[in-house]
Length: 153
Image (cartoon, rainbow, N blue to C red):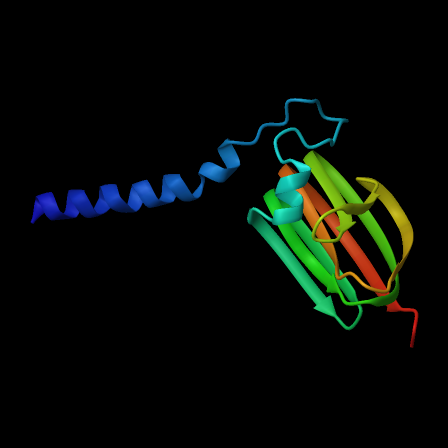
């Protein structure tokens, strides 16, 4: 019985340590004021590698969204835009780590938002491709607010 409990405990601890491994693989090696990604590549962003986060709160109401994270690592798709015209307004505050907020198609990056900037606006006019609004981070702590307006309506 005692042997079974110890084995079960070891399995649980192994799962916990493996699940947290994504955070230990990313380090902020470029300093506090440089938010450039060091490990995640453009190919990772375009193809998506998944993400993990700790202490995350997100909300979406109508055409606005908020996302606040204590630690974020990986790539996450926030929105998907079908062909059309949109205005995207973003307020982003990066407190630590490395972070990139961008618009991309399945094969190229279209636009990067500044990692620290209020009321950044980008008009997206896509007639053929689907466009993705993604965030990529390496141990990033940030606050994001955004608003999307459909310009065709």
